[in-house]
Image 1 (cartoon, rainbow, N blue to C red):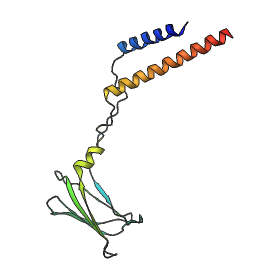
Image 2: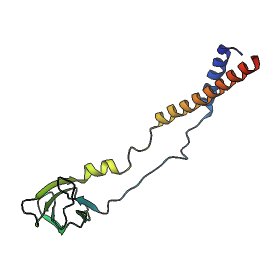
Image 3: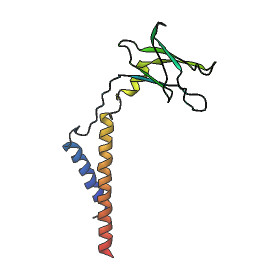
Length: 154
């Protein structure tokens, strides 16, 4: 079999396989998440956790939402309030005067990347990946035929 004939057969095989396939979603992965707790972590410049620091959480309007202290790992957890998307968190290391930090947490920005949206490949990517698999299989088959033909001739 010459190379042109093999390429023609390969092209026909690819076209027929494209016409005979349908979209299958047996391996599609869906992720759902719930936000039941927010966790902040306070640590010093060297990476040491800020233990027993006072934590004050304010809503977007500056009204006090919750207070507490960090644990031995420098972490503080609190439940988010329904409808509240932004929090101002102030951490004050009372046992080390002068060490105070604050940050703003915006849940609409945090949850946009964590809810699993966008983790599924678009349809065109699946089609291109399928073509890649078919081309790979056809390449292996062509290599096998070439190897077998050369083995017969020698």
